[in-house]
Image 1 (cartoon, rainbow, N blue to C red):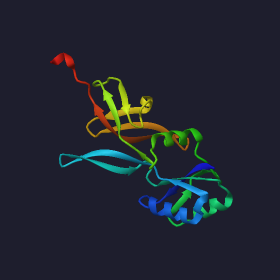
Image 2: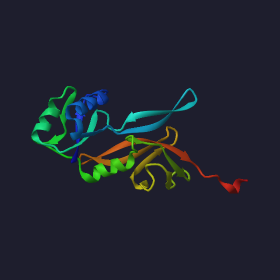
Image 3: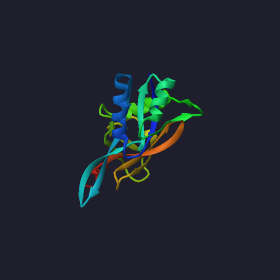
Image 4: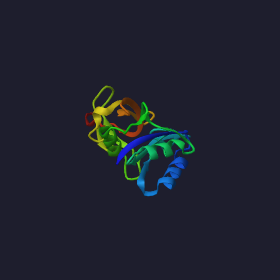
Length: 174
């Protein structure tokens, strides 16, 4: 079984996922990766769950021409992402990274990041980004987001994920 990306109408990911599960029963695994982010509203920090790839459902199946046609004709599906006239699987390394970042519920949780100051190196203390500091391109401490670069469908993309930024105490100021 291989992973494939299905382009769907944004905002209908869950409904279309249910349709595909109903049509294919046990012969398909679906995944809609999400990310938990922190946002501040009215002076209060709140958690929100957003789609990692809005407008996409990832499916794992033994693809053939019949499944391909059924998926493409399913209501709400734009198309199974492909190159040319054939269906194209998601690269194993790309999918392995996505699966490493998400938990059992398909969510990228908040990572705790130690930042020593402006322009200083960062260290991920815990969370899905631990050991993946090289992927982090930018930290926005105010918005509590890290911009991460990864490959998806053969192209580099950037995504924002939630982080809690921790600054070390400067013990020499006591």
